[in-house]
Structure formats: C-alpha cells, structure tokens
Amino acid sequence: MKKGLAIAIATGALLGVIASQNPSQAVPLPAQVVTPQPQVQVVAQQQEQNQQNGWDVPDLSKKEADKYSVKPVVGDDGKPVIQVALLLDTSGSMSSLIDQAKTELWSIVNKLGEAKYKGQSPRIEVALYEYGKSTLARDEGYIRQLAPFTHDLDGLSEILFALQTNGGDEYCAWVIRSSMDNLKWKHRQGSLRMIFVAGNEPFDQGPVEVGPVLSEAKKKGILVHPIYCSTGHRSDEVSWESAADLAHTDLKVIDHTRVARIPTTPYDKRINELNSQLNRTYVGYGMEGRAKMVRQEAQDSNMASVSGGAAAERAVTKSSANYSNAEWDLVDKAKAEGGVNNIPASQLPSEMQTMSPKEREAFVAKKATERKQIQEEIQSLNKKRQEYITEHQAQSEEGVTLGKAVIKTVKAQAAEEGFSIE
Image 1: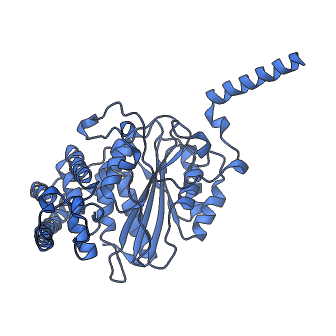
Image 2: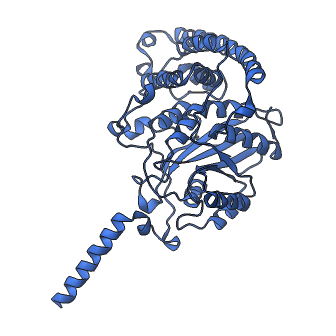
Image 3: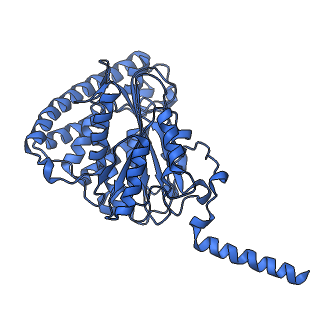
C-alpha cells in the first residue's frame, strides 16, 4: 500500500510539473469550458516603465481597480447605436498592435461619429478585451474584459496606454464567445453590432470550436471581423481566411509592426490651443470630479506625445457629441438633466459651494456657452483640416493599420445595415 501511494504521489507531481511548463496543455477541454461571468475591470499588473515613450501611464498595480474602471452604458434609449467590441491580442509579440490602438482610437471614434441612420446620429459604444497573455487566468482562456460597452473614451484611452504584453496562448473563438455572452448587445433595429478580433497566431487555437461560435454570432446579427496581423506565415493566414468565410465577412490583413501616423496639418496648432481652452470649461463634481479632470489632461498629454496631429484628432472628438461626461462634469450634467441644483453643495467644487442656486445655474450656463463656442471653432477648423489631409495624404504609400482596417470595414458594413458614413 505504501509503495502504491508513493507511485501515485510521484505521478501527480510529474503531471503538475508538465502542466506548469506547458500551460496550454492544462486548459479545460471544450466540454469543460465555463463561460466567464461578466466582469468590469481594468488590467492590474506591474508597469515597469511608467513613462515609456513620454506617455503618462498610470501604475494600475498600485491603484484601486474601481478608480480606473470605466462606467458601462446603462439602459437603452432606443436611439440608433453603433456597438464596437475590440478584442486585442496582448501576447508578447503584439506591443505594436497596442500602440496602433492607442494612437488610432480617436480616429475610429471620429469616423463612427460621422454616421447617420435615418437622419439621426447614432450613439457610439466601444468595448475592449485583451486575450493571449500568460499572466491572465488560464481557466478563463487567457481572456480579460477591460471595458464593457461604454461612452467613457478617456477611460478607454487610459487602459490602452496602461496595457503591457507578454507571451501566451491566443484563443480567438473563446474571446469571441466571451464578448458575445458578456457584453450587453442591443438586438434591435437601428443598431450596428460588430466584433473586431486582431491577432497573429492560428485562429483555431484553443478548446472552443470556431464554427459554432461564428454561426451563433451571425444568427444574433453580430458581425465578426477577423484582423490578421501578418507574420508572413501563410498557414496561419489561411486559418484567419477560413474564419472570415465562416463569419461571412472579409478578412483584413494589417501590418501591426507599422507605426500608426496621424497626418499633421497647418490647423493642428490652433486646434490644440482651443483644446486647452476647452478643458477650462469642465467643472468636476462629486468624488470623481477632480480625478477625472486630471485623467482628461493626462490623455491629452499622451496624444500630444505621439504628435500634434494625434492630439488634434483627440481634440476633434472632444468637440463632438460623442464626448460626454455627465457623471463627473457639471456642464454635461446640466445638459443631460436640465440643471444642477439637485446636486448637494458638498459635492460641488469649493468655489460653487457658497453660491446661491441661481448663481450656480448662471456659472454653469456661462461655462456651457464658452464650451459651445470653442467646440464650434474646432469643428470648423477640422473641416479645413480634413480637406488638407485629403489633398496631401498619399494613401497608396501607407500600410494598413488597425485603425484603418476598422474604419474601412465599418464604412462598408454600415451601408449594408442602413447606416451611412461619408
């Protein structure tokens, strides 16, 4: 009996060593896959270079996670909506893909903001997942929901600038399944629902079968768009082509190693000056107000460190209806609810606490007027900026990046779903 017990213990130890050295072999089989429960969280990990490339990168490992989580969209007002879920491979070789996402987030949002559905401007909701990183939970498929569908664009930018990559196994079908099950999709008329999954390893890796997942997505009206980050391995690309065929969409192949460049124009300097003025029209309130104003400026600095053109692209978003912060800014709060006198004085900034209700309304109204004037000037300059870009940019000489692939796909898909984008 003792000899048998010793053999059993040794065998268990050996299997444990094998599993620790080969994590992918320890992933549950398809029959054992349990759909992860919805989680709204941001990545919390060691950031060894917080000032990498001059970017203002928060050290999420030293902060309370809820301070950096983005607020989900609540409810459905029935207005047209475009829902985009970005599923990004964050394994060791994909840091340049994340750089493209950081730089081109605002370009994507601006293009989506040009959409119309039966004459109405749709709301834009963006969700974010990472997958394929070995530090993520193995029994959850090396997947993490970084953001649910949200309007909190500063929060998305902060998360992207905090992301790090390292080696792991990439399970495309599993992360698609997770996003389908855990995000709050609006299955109704007037909604455009899209998943973009970007990676560079074989699409069919992992225990979850590709075909059934993509078939279910199609039945639900969720359009899955594979984006292959080319490595030159034809066999890998074939698996992505097959996935696109199963999803009834077109494969997009990008050069994820290329630096995403936002064109610079003669109008960028003035737009960025106006953006600084725009920030002074924000009036933070409540427990989050001051922190969110600091975050806003940090994301301005992040984009300015990329280029003047990139900063201008973000400023254009901030001058649009898609940039709204009613949960922490009194001006947007008053616009959404028709006033601010329902907010306790203790939650107001110090300079407003001693004001009468009438004075508070006047103070916020003045800020709103200033903001509208600044936003209108930015929008006017952006029209000239776009004309300049169209005239001077040599599109044929540029490689395809993540942002360009998403924008091109959205424009084509929108037309098929009753949306129009110029």
